[in-house]
Image 1 (tube, rainbow, N blue to C red):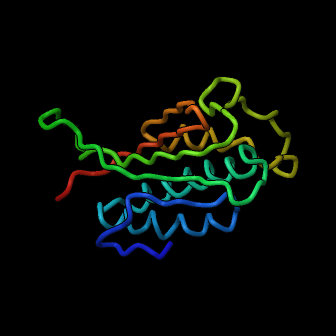
Image 2 (image 1 turned 90 degrees about the vertical axis):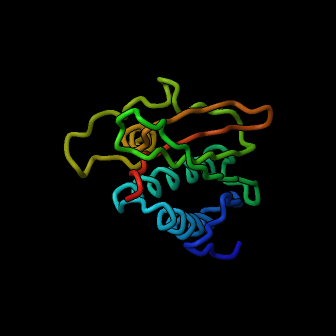
Image 3 (image 1 turned 30 degrees about the vertical axis):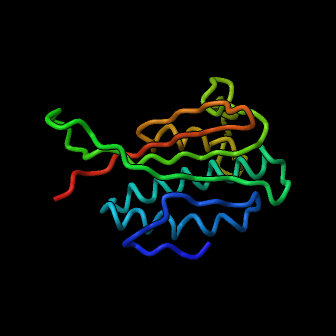
Amino acid sequence: MTGPSPSSPEPRLTLKSQLEDLTLVRPWVEAIAARHSVPADTQFAIQLCLEEALSNIIRHGYQGQPNQSISIACTVECALAGVGNEDAGELVFTVEDHARPFDPLAPSAALAPARAVNSQELLPGGQGIRLMRKFASRLAWQQLPNGNRLTLAFAIPAPL
């Protein structure tokens, strides 16, 4: 895929199930963020959550099998007028794969790892779902006939 320009970011990004393809996510999100005047902290949250979800799909869903497809779509959902909400709406990212079904929102998926006594005993992993729950304004998962759909929404400010 060629890099999107900030004036007209592509609404969809398609990746292959290889960690190297994660490098395509940042410029795509940056272009979308620029177009919708997304604050830096929200842009960081979007990138963090997408990279976490995508790396989990590649590592666990596809179990490292290269050249499997992952698609990400971005839409804007506007808040209802007159509700008194300072947000203009949400940027909604929909991630679809053809991996084995996995519900990241199920209670068993978000169990915290055992508490480490000190920082040198911390084990990597196990925090991605917690991060997504913290940073996304809305999360949803749906099992597809041939895979998974994860929806991550992030509040965006009203235009000036």
